[in-house]
Image (cartoon, rainbow, N blue to C red; front, side, top):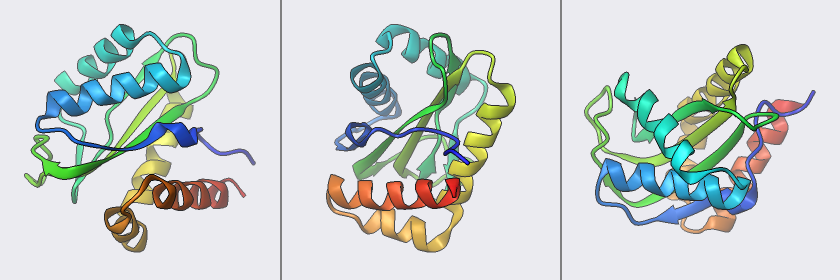
Amino acid sequence: MTALFTIDPRAVRIVKAETKREILDALADCFADVYALDRTEVSERIDEREKLGSTGFGRGVAIPHARIEGLSRPVAVFLKLEHPVDFDAADGMPVDCIFGLLSPEQAGAMHLQALAAISRMTRDERMHEALVAATDVEALNGLLVNVIDRNAA
């Protein structure tokens, strides 16, 4: 079985952001840089979804997501923030771990399965603690690749 989504090692970053807007902009920039997507379209799609309700998942995690034309499979970005930022999360807690997900426009079930996989990963207490404790991109990549590959097996 293949992984439900792809995360390029270059799409794992530690960023400084002060606001939700800066986080969403950093996500759009990363998707555009790493996956050669149109930055404006990515930003607009993520913003459209966010207007429906915050994707602040809880426990310091947000999962901004959208569907977009031009993709053949779901792709992800992971941003760890230098400092937690208010994201209008359901539990009221600021976020410091951001998983961005973009899926093909027509990928209804595939998109939901990828979202569910990310949700399970971030709800796992040991994984959550490891992501929060990681201090560099290499450590974050090691954690994410290990879990994504294990879930695909």
